[in-house]
Length: 444
Ligand code: NAD
Image (cartoon, rainbow, N blue to C red; front, side):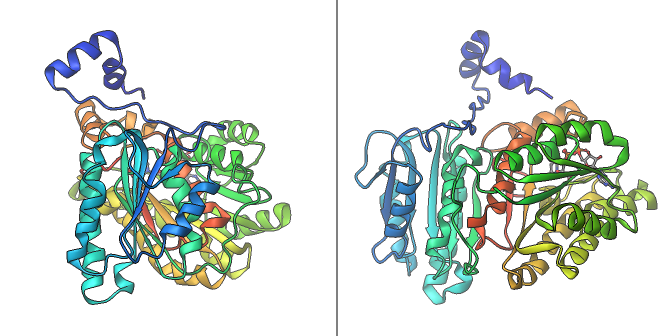
């Protein structure tokens, strides 16, 4: 599973040879450790005239323990710009004027965050100008070096106070492998509440994680447990031993169940109700691949992938909502894939199922909002797991290097993104699909 090339670049020989030959030199990404400073330096905050977010954001950054400056220094851990005042393409010049002098000052694993107004909620020239910000951010993501990332957050009018969990996530090391994403924070803020303790935002919550015995699912269980949730770790009976280990490690419960079984939604609803009085967070992580080009694919290969990766999830959601097992202000989180966005050779079944997860988010968002809840998805790119270790070497290397961050992500990167969605303060983050892919060129 190890990225031997990246290890080589950090060795004495690699440090000498790699720059000489102009080889890729992936940065060591800063990742979250409890107690680490929010940022390794100051955040420069700026705004286009007439912006509605600057003051609110300044207070949010202070609360997060970030040093905020308004005059450029030599080095910045983050550049944050309120572009909501940009109402016309001519005013895009404000964006250039802010970033041009300071873009080279962004430190290792630094952060660029631009905040705008959702184009679909604006009209005419404002809509065009706000839409244009996407091209800017995606290009900055490609230009930044040393593990730095760029993101665009569209904040609906009225949702200003509800941006805090998103800003904290994007500026922190928890978003290490999230790059060049466009996130929407809406106005469904009636249930958004800041956690009493930002290091334990899920205290008192019950979280179900499917496919939790290994890989990304095990990391999700660990991160949600770290954040205070009681985790119900679910996997098929054949994975029982590993599942127990994960559940024990996070102080949660293990539930052996095949989610594709006809009675699985019923059993799950009963288990969650009788043992835990319901559930707050549902993470549909269980997934399988049965790769074959379409002409070679059997009916079984098609059916099993659609069943695990999509149909069973819909059945579970419908049951948990209908029986009110999912608490109000609940969270449903899907695990899609960049294959579901870009498609992939040999994965018509898998890509169909993963694109379907995006459809599930689109359809579910208004429904969940009625309950004060949210539904969102992550779309991982190349993540270092057993699944990707089995990929042939050349394709594996391409998967790692053909991205702005030049490396694969870790399961924890997917898990941290899911924890941000699960945070009670993220109630206005609904209907999003965020890629955790280091800005992979695939599907860009
Ligand atoms: P994995 O194969 O290591 O883990 C998947 C888990 O799901 C396994 O423990 C498996 O037993 C469980 N599972 C399968 N069928 C099940 C069923 N019917 N009922 C209950 N549990 C079942 O895979 P992973 O790499 O950790 O991937 C986790 C998720 O992330 C999957 O949905 C996958 O499609 C997605 N994903 C992974 C990558 C990657 O690079 N690894 C990229 C994009 C998306």
